[in-house]
Length: 105
Image 1 (cartoon, rainbow, N blue to C red):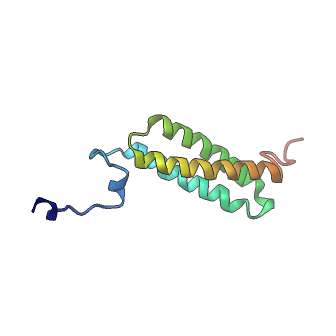
Image 2: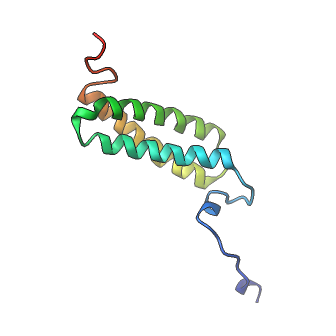
Image 3: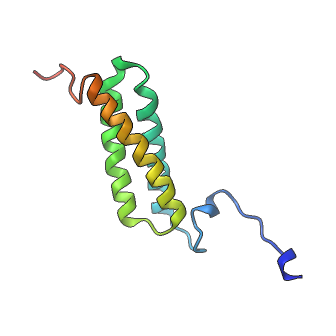
């Protein structure tokens, strides 16, 4: 009955599916998801276009860097979700007024 002996898995162990710890890669994946969520939710108000476009741009950068250094499939999954959300927030922020939005020029 070897299959009856299971270890408890935490939520973070889903990102470390290879059995090793990846603190930098996990942190970048979580930061990308948070930045993507902020970029998406700030597009609901067109007056926050500066926040959504800049946070979306930073989220795209961290997501691409995270894809470059990611180690496991779980990290890559979160990075793609966060990267997509950051890109949508960035593009809608650009549509509502852009990165500078009248501050310069």
